[in-house]
Image 1 (cartoon, rainbow, N blue to C red):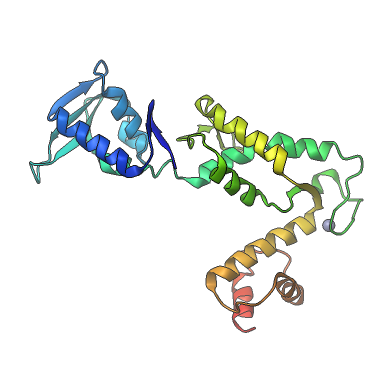
Image 2: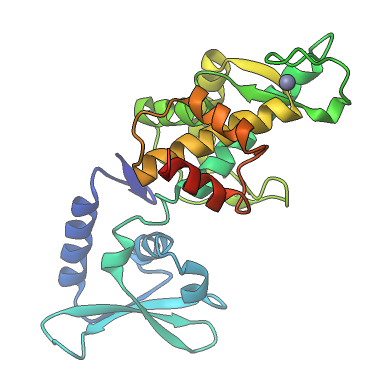
Length: 265
Ligand SMILES: [Zn+2]
C-alpha cells in the first residue's frame, strides 16, 4: 500500500504518524498561516479526515498547534476558520487514511471509468441475445452487460493488487447515476485501470431475468458464506432451492424465508 499527502509519498500509516508527530514536536506551539511552508501539509492531511467538510467549514484561515489541555506534554492541532470559529482535529486519525480506504467511492469511480466500454459492447452487438437463456425478443433496455468470470469485483481487486499507482484519495461528485468520478490528479490510476479492464474483462449479454438470477446467486452465496451454515450447499442447489420458493431476486423481503431455508437444509 502506498499513500501520499500532497507531494509527500508515504509507505505506511505508521510512517505517516511518525512523520507528523516529529513535525508537530519540532514546530511546537505555533500558528501555521497560508504562507507557512507547512500549511499545505496540514491542509492535505486534514483531507484524510472523514469529517473533512465539517472541520473545514466556511474555509481555513490557519492551523495552529497548542498544548493539549489534558496532558501538556502532548500537542493538539486546531483550525481557525475564516469566520473566526475554532475546531480541533485529530491528526492521528488523519494518519489512518480512512477516507482513502473508502472502497465504496473507489468502486463507484472505477465503475464509471469502464461504463463506456460496457455501453459500447452492447451497442456493437448485431443481435441482442441472452448468453444464458438465449432469449432474443426482449426490449433493448432489458439486456444487461455482465462481467463473466472474472466478475467486476475480481477484476477490480486484481488490479488493486497489481497497480503501483497511488490509491486515489478523494473523488469528484458527478451526477445521480454516477455520483463519484476520479479527479484529474488520479488520471494515471484511471488510465491504467481502464487499460487493465479492457484487456482482461470478459463481457457477456444477459437478459433482465438471468442477470437478476446471477446477482441473486452471488448475493446468496456471499450471504451463505457469511452466516456459515450448511457449508456444502452448491450454487446449483441454491438455485434449485430458490426455484422451489419461487424466489426471483434477493431482497430484504425474501431474506428471512431464505435464511430459514438455508438453516433448515
Ligand atoms: Zn436470459
